[in-house]
Length: 226
Image 1 (cartoon, one colour):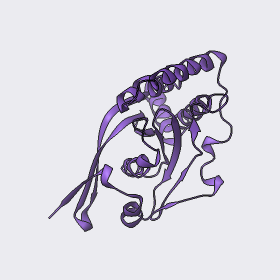
Image 2: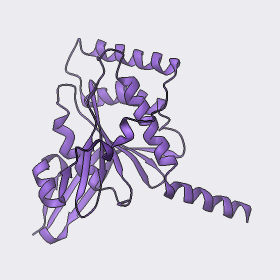
Image 3: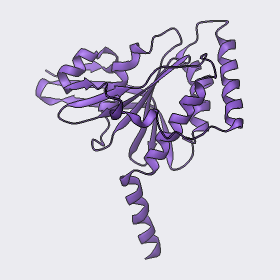
Image 4: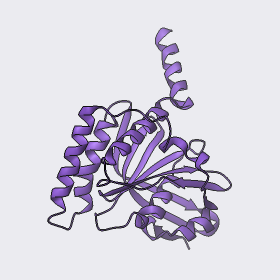
């Protein structure tokens, strides 16, 4: 009999057992959140300071629900990172399914926000209400990232509760490996949203310069010239 599980039920222990998933603590595995990041303009900083102020205002009358986090904090970040513009596509509540046929298990869930460049997953984003710790969403987000059909590409993820942000990187294989960034907090001195936006832009540029996308562009150029 097939057993169907929700992604919200999956723990880090189950991911380790079912997918041979391990945490990597070597900084060289996930340099994308630390080095060669694009600069943020003065106008972008002003916009992010406004997001910070808006979020501070919301905190005066809790609770802050998940949809509010997406509207007030996440949406401006995706906009400034140009993830709403071609060739990127934003998919909300994207359904995923992972079948473990040998064990008769199917895992189902819905990604809050998925940013896609052609068939490349730029980012799987899991947002939680403000009262939740980021760790509540780690195993759930990793489950979504494991569902990425492009197994030859690294998958990146972001967990946020509106107040804090953490990036993840996953590389699938016989032993699937993942790493995490430090936590960025919206109220840290200097406004950590600047760093979050810079990383989002960097990952978007990484997708645009990945071999599958570049090969598709070359192929289209040849067809157009023919």
